[in-house]
Image (cartoon, rainbow, N blue to C red; front, side, top):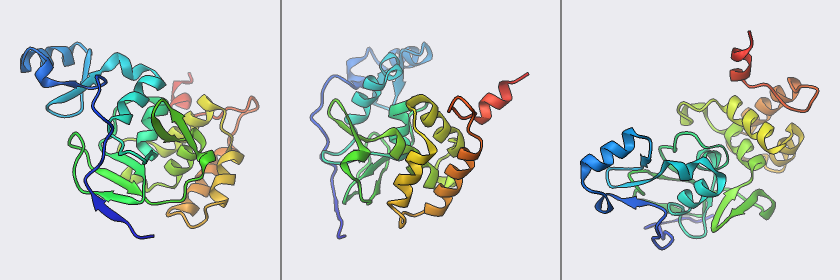
Length: 211
């Protein structure tokens, strides 16, 4: 499919993000960051850390950075569903490619087929469902995930949102041409083999917490 390069058409600005010009100088930003009140996206834009403690809050933050018509996926979707550290880039499903940075972050496009059943709508944000996000993470080259453990990320999505290995395998076998498909199938099958009787799966962190 032909793709185009363009400037990202972002949603209209609202009060979700805070600009440096709204604060009493750099010392105010530094102090508020140290206190954990604000989290910086770049040198001039930040968000309230408390807003990122809920899924609707994180979705509102992500929505300001996702081009209109695109869908948040992979590590951005993972952040929306589970929280943690905001990812170093903006990963989306789109048929366009974007050259300009958004808050010092590159927009990384996955030009893949996306059915309506793979999309959740959180406010105005389109984001891949937990199951689809788990599949994308499982297929991703681990070197592109930074500090994220693909196994732990997939397990957390499964445990938090009642996603099963079979749910993921159905998605994967419907999309056999995805890059990293065999890697994703292997990871999901390994998780299925370690599933506990209550239906949950144990993360590496759970294992480390055992006496």
